Image (cartoon, rainbow, N blue to C red):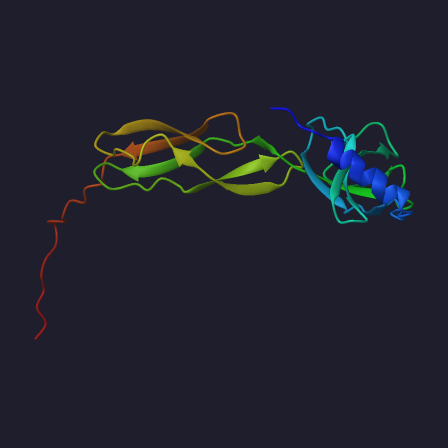
Length: 193
């Protein structure tokens, strides 16, 4: 299919020859705003700052622009909040990035629980973890079995998983025999009238 451009070119030529001009200036887009950035990093895990930031232009469109931060390396050794400032060409203010370094699970020690043979024993729903900043935090645990089998006397180890912890959590259940109390037959019944 052939497209004929001659009528369009002719119309433009006539339009221009009659003295019509266009006073449309090219709109110069400027960066209107860069929203503050908040990022979370796990303690001890390497982290880098982004090479670009999202900017809002004067026509309210979004665009990615390169950013140069006030530091080249980020440390996640200590838990806490860190502020970083970046320069974006064409923007008079600074881009601001808040880095929240949070502790991660360092260790979950094995749990010991006692049970009596033939009686039900509930699995704990949470476990306490020692965090990398040496605080204790409780986490939900998913056990490998739905319940503890208490039909045999002895030790039973059940394993569970906690989101964010790569090792298995151990629950050691000590199942003991029920204590049978023998009635005391060496007593006298005295009646007081």
